Image (cartoon, rainbow, N blue to C red; front, side):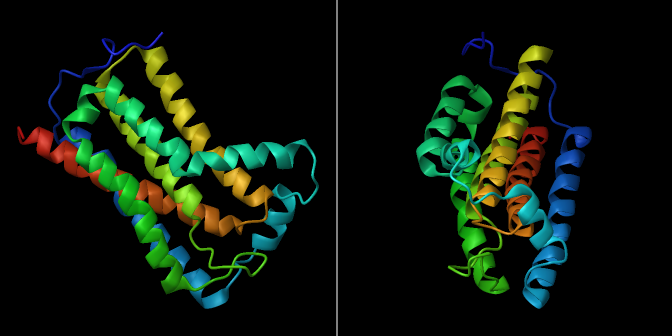
Length: 215
């Protein structure tokens, strides 16, 4: 069982070896996101989008659709805000720079709204702009923050792996739910993964740098 006492900040100071992976994740996700956004803006639905949507999507009213309706909440404030509050309660490291992680959770959805206007691509049903997915962006930003905090806290290997797996499952499940409900093209979902990852990794990069400088 994971208790508040178990969440103790790891002892080793953040050095170059800790900063480099998050810098790499941030820059790679940003580069791929820019390329994907330009392609989506120029061509609309990307090659493979219709096929993948038919593969993952379902318009029936069966169990999968009902499940997707519940999973979809994982990208909303009603789940993410309590989740962040729980993270702050459990983790001293997360509490230390709470404003940074709150900024990620607020800033990533704001950026996706701006990017939607720039790309200007409609959802599969043409109801609204779709690239990138806002639900997936928010869920991914939260998940990557959790992964970063877990990697820095002094937890057992099993606890760290379990929490990381839960975070990854959250963002993947929300992406699946958006496609199965025909709310987004698969590339919209991929864009949400990339934007959420980029925002959270940028914050982790900065936090590692400041910790390494003794801030």
